Image (cartoon, rainbow, N blue to C red; front, top):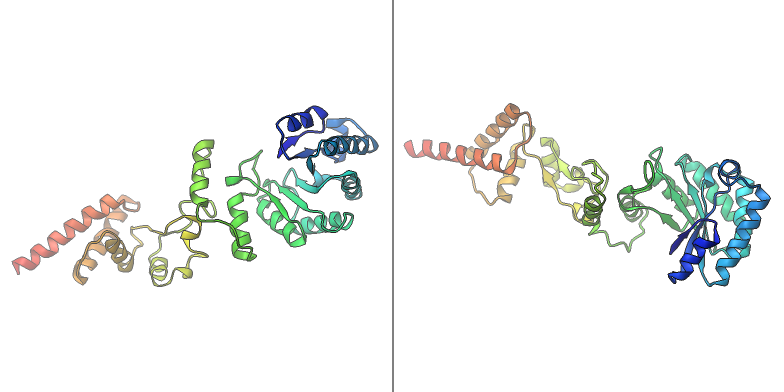
Length: 313
């Protein structure tokens, strides 16, 4: 689809590239009417109908995007959506431009808009993340009857961005039972967007952050090795991630044994205990976790010492 401001020249460009539809963005809040558009509510409705009629005559599917919906007078917002849908709009789009609505209020707003539209009219939401509620508001909207969520990969967007696509998908898949998503490439997708956008992801970023399936505490590591669901809400493979056990001062012998197995190194119980203690000491001394190379160096040293002592005996 194309994206259009409330001007015919934008719609003409969408028509020119033969897009099947457009998102027509036109803010109805009094703030925008007064300071940006400088028109009255009556003039707004007149122009909205004129633009919708023009786009429909050219066979376009129209999503009507009421920018700044969440700061628009409720009765006027309902009038706007009712009017443009009667004029031919196919989908109503509620926009939380400044991320300033509460999830409970979003549910109420979707239900109110739905009440003035013909049954079956799709409602879309576009939730910014200024208060960290982009995902929560998107899910609240779905609970209230919205059928489309506008999102962006890794949440890219103006200011604090939008509800992140990967978080929306996993929440719908895991918490709402809405299956059918191909989730296994989400990590790869987000890493690709990170590289292309030059936007650095936090290691704690839900779903795709590098720390999401990383376990540091020895207690956690042991439990995860016995049964991953003790400390993982879903398998890392679901999103194309992998489990990581940080080898350091908090690691117990179970994590060390798992790491040795991963590296296909066989040791006896005495060697395992020596390696575990040596790892803890080295990590404490370095004040950091150990890299694979540092871990292997310790393993080789301790095995050599242990086996050398045994040979002497």
